[in-house]
Every structure is written in C-alpha cells, then in structure tokens.
Length: 139
Image 1 (cartoon, rainbow, N blue to C red):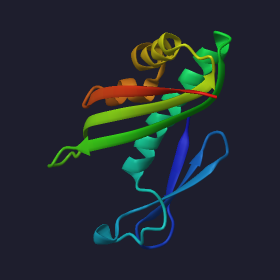
Image 2 (cartoon, rainbow, N blue to C red):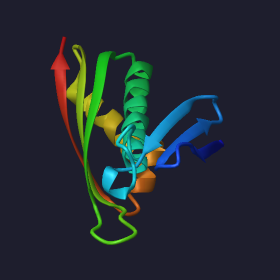
Image 3 (tube, rainbow, N blue to C red):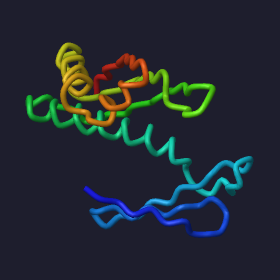
C-alpha cells in the first residue's frame, strides 16, 4: 500500500494521492493556518476506521446470507489534551438495516470486525478505549 501527500496551496491544504489512484484533499483548521476547505487529517483517520468496520460488517453479513440492506456507523471520538493528541476514546454507533436480520448475527459481525478484521479500529484501540452499540432496523 502506498500514498503520496503533497502540500498544495501555501496555506495548510494537502492533496493525498493513493496507490489505488484516488485523490483526497485535507485542510487544517483556520486557527492552525487552514481555510476549512476539506476534512482534517485526524477526521480522515476516524472516517477510515468507520469505513473499515462498516465494510467488514456488511461483508460478514452478506457471506452469512443475511438480507442486509444498509449499514451506517456514527463515530464520536475524544482526543488527548496534550501532544501527541491521540484518540483516547472512540464510540461506534451502528445502524444496520435489513430484512429479518437477527440481532445476534449483527452483534457477531460487529464483534468479528472489532476483534479480528478491522485493522484501522484495532490499531486505534492501542491508544483509545473503543466502545460500540447497535440498532437493528427491520425493512
């Protein structure tokens, strides 16, 4: 895996070019010299953890032949007060929808992601306490 990040505007905006040929812009907060034009790098890290675990949950449920139709993960994070301002707490709230989804199957998929498959959240768990809850929505 590779990525190239380039400073682009003389302010605090950066362009990331991924190894899979995608581009993402990041920017800093105005108080840090940014112009608030794009997500902050730490927001991207949090979003990556949400995307990673959502990907796992959907994949696990589909492989189990569960009729999953939607998966949304809302994340709330706290950071350390001093540098390095690592994440210290992250809460994942899952909203998983489908037809006749069994809550225990959804809970198992989330647990497998948390304990075995989601590299991003497992890595962040080295500095942060990670919690989660889930809503299963019948469609």
